[in-house]
Amino acid sequence: MEEEILGKAYDARLMRRLVRYLRPYRATVIVSLGFLVVQSLAQVCGPILTQLAIDKYLARPDHPVESVLNRWLSSNTWTGLAQISGLYLAAVLIAFAAEFTQTYLMQRTGQYAMFDLRRELMAHLQRLDMSYYDRNPVGRLLTRVTTDVDALNELWSSGLVEISADLLGLALAIMVMVRMSPGLTLLLVLVMPVVILVTARFRKAVQQSYRRIRVAIARINAYLQEHVNGMAVLQLFNREGRSRQEFTRINRDHMEAYKDAIQAYGWFYPVIEFLSMLALAALLAYGGFRIRSGFLSLGVMVAFFQYGQRFFRPIQDLSEKYNSLQAAMAASERVFKLLDTPAAITSPRVPKPFPQEAASVEFDHVWFAYKDEDWVLRDVSFRIEPGETIAVVGHTGAGKTTLASLLLRFYDIQRGSIKIGGVDIREFALDDLRRHFGVVLQDPHLFTGTLDSNIRLGSEQVSDEAIASAAAQVNLLDFVRALPEEFAHPVRERGNGFSTGQKQLISFARALAHNPRFLILDEATSSVDTETEFRVCEALANMVEGRTSLIIAHRLSTIQRADRILVMHKSQLRESGTHQQLLAARGIYWTLYQLQYKDQENHGNRSQVSDREIFVPAGSNGQPAAAMDR
Image (tube, rainbow, N blue to C red):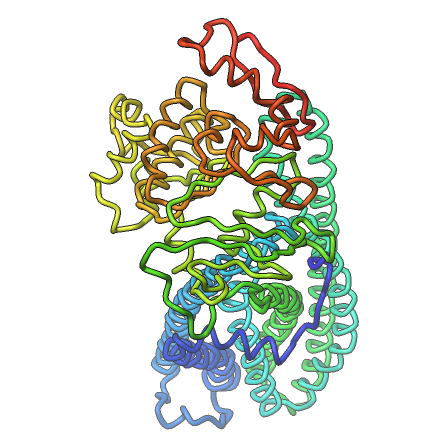
């Protein structure tokens, strides 16, 4: 899995690309770095002022102290201490103000950069073709846009700045300490090899934990997305217990990974603290000897203790930030891999204009396979004249829905061509091609919002009158008028609260409201009851008039209205003709009719539908429809 890749702790190529997202906010970043320098300088001043106060006024008042502040400080002890106290307070306040401003600016910049990156990811996901989603689970894509971008935000908002602050503060502290006492500085530095070894051991342990955490989070996201969407199936088949057990196993992996990380942090900080105390104890022993020998002042000793306490803190922070940096590099590798995935289906550089006059649709020797040469369509050719209504029937897997997907360029064919008005559809801009089609799928999809927004889909060209007219034509208006908010009625995720039939009627209204030139109906009446289906078909009889229509259906009531019926069988177009012509030919269509449609036609011709039974169309196994009690 991609989440298992640790990646480099620092990759210059990735870092350069990440910095691009900060370029629009470079002025803010520069100001933030300026406050970072001020913060580091202010923090270094504290021990210097402490050393000056002790050596000049407290320990040996008569001992001369070399300092640029001597000329500004009073010779009076109390006045001088008050001046130094004021400077110390000013340094603390400046450090506080600089740290607050710097943190605020970088956190704000990180949020803007994260916003830009997520917007770019969303736009790129919308450009990718359907085959990409066939290969990649939704949970993995959610992880890219959420968890991985959060890791990059940690790098933008605090990681890089805090690493810079730690390095700058450590460098300034060493410079001041060397100037004060090279011997004491060397004593502190001698502890560094042990600290580095401990840090390397800690980093290795945490790396493995973070890798396992990333893998577990990705699995949790994928599992939740799949099983929450399929909750009805879980409850229907009483699989809640098994699902809980599987989720518990995945969740436990996440917990165990975090436990290992907690254990690593648990021993790392005490060990570093112990080493720092040993270093300070050595400072105390060596510094005391130097003080008694007269080679070191008490103020320098106290200042070194303060610097010594700050000396190990950046090392601890750098160790933790190293892991954050590595996690960010791995996350950026995955995010950029997604962004660099080319869209297999794109608009041409110089697209041809879509025909404005009536145009035919032609499949010319089309071959198509979703994978390799496992052909779903084999040498399929047919032509739909302007205004003609074509129905496509056939067994499951014969390639019926694939025809609609290819016509909309969700996938591109391997051989042959698909033409509209004599022009290959690959020569049209994608948005220009698809805006002329109205599509109703077998599985209707509603978005969170309102009924109005689901029918309009953000198109300002669709008027309120067009929405109401479309709803009336598909027998939806009475249902909408009965709602308190009517078209402003809220729609929850995936249309929860609406029946499948109601959602399909909303999809009908959505297609018709945009007044398309071409209609594609893919099992569009499969989820409505028989009475509603008759009303919808009456509306469709008016709607398909003057439009080129492709109807993929099993139900005879829809197919009989077609001008021509195409019969797909084993990836090939085997028969073509009207309903009566195909029955007279006694071929594949006649066999399908005998198995599936004859009983429906007989009952459909009744003056009233039985109150005791409804007829369910045949399943994928081609068995006759079964009568079921309501």
